[in-house]
Every structure is written in C-alpha cells, then in structure tokens.
Amino acid sequence: MKPRFAVFGCNPLAIEVAWRLSLAKTPFVMVDSDAALVEAANKEGLVAELIDYTDDEALRSVGIGSHIEGMFGLFTEDSENVFLAISARALDPYLRIVAVCLAPEAAPKLLAAGADKVVDPYEISGARVHELIERPEVVELLEQTVFGQQDLNAAEITIPHHSWLHGVHLSALRKVMTQNLILLGVVDLERGKALILSTRGIDHKLDYDDVLVVIGAQSEIDAFRALIERTSPPANK
Image 1 (cartoon, rainbow, N blue to C red):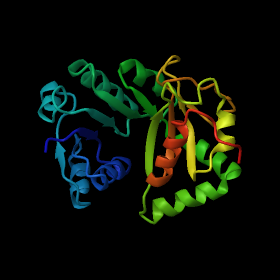
Image 2 (cartoon, rainbow, N blue to C red):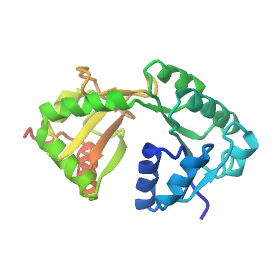
Image 3 (cartoon, rainbow, N blue to C red):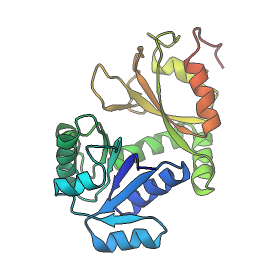
C-alpha cells in the first residue's frame, strides 16, 4: 500500500505521531534531514528515511504532489516547518498540512505558508490544565488511556444540516454531554481554519458545518457523534 500520510521529523513528538498512525494501521512515510534522528527512529522500530526536505524532488520522491493526502510538519524549528509548508503547498494545493509551532508568533506565519492547522503545544497544555480543574474525571480517563496504551482517539465531527445544534451555544452542548470526552473546541470555517478552544471563555454559537474537535475513547466518540446528529436536543443531564 502506498503511504497516505507523511511525517516530517524524527524527534520524540514525531515518533509518537508515527506510533499512533501505526496503531491505526494507517500507511505513512517518516522522513528527516538529520541522520542521527533518522537512526534513532529506526532503533525505535519505525521505518524512517533520510531526505533533504528543501529539495522539491526529494519531496516528490516521498509522494508529495501525488499520493500523499496529508502531511505533518513536526520539525523542532519553526523556520523549518514554515519552509516545508511553503514547498509542500506549492507542489500540491490540495494537500492537508498540519504543523507544530514552538513560538506563538510562528502560528500566523505557518498559516500564511499554507498550513491548514497549526498545533501550539503550550496552548494545548493550557487547555489540559483548565480541564483538570473543571473536569478532573475526564483527565483521569485521559491519563489512563494514554499511559495504559488503551483506546484513545482525536476526532473532528462536522455538525450536519439536520442537527439540533444549529444556533445553539457551546455551553448548552456541554450541559447535555454524558460522554467521557475532552471537547477541545470548534473550528468555524466562516471565520477561518483556526481552532477556537473551548477553554478560552468564548461561548461560541454553533452553526451547520462547524467542526467539533474531541479526544477520547472511540466508543465515546461514536456516542457523541450520535448526539450531534440528533434532530432534536436531548433532555438536560
């Protein structure tokens, strides 16, 4: 099977992403321009390749511009991820690009460079601290699934046009949630592709085609999806 995704970077974060893709049986290719990091990833049991990411032909050789559907830019330098996003976007205008940023000021640069989503580890850490205070039982579940190597998934659920959630605020959704999930936030495509974190104090008004981002066990995600797809609201908890 040809790889569907490309992981750029062989650092600890990239290795964790690669293992998640492996567990999901998703074909991917893993590459880096640092020979020592590639060797370290290989020793972890992953298949990683050494390439020059600044060379367009090298990017094409791993499938950018052809069969690769999505790409993770996980280098440890923001400048490398920005350059990579520019190069990959030029080769494939439809490629889905997710990049990590280490400095907050790098996020708009990555988006301008062509990234579809930018992950800020510090912002996610802040969200986790808030969840720890507000919903400690959910965080306990998250800890168990992460360190217990059990079922943990992130999902993006689009609000369908028949859903009861059209015109409903995020706070109202939380009141009827019975699933053990962390609701990270919502992507309102009318406002752009940035994730509006649910911990920012913004009681976002939901609309059709908004995308809800959650983390949890697959069975809980499926139950949450069923809740979203209802045509009428459930009774409050």
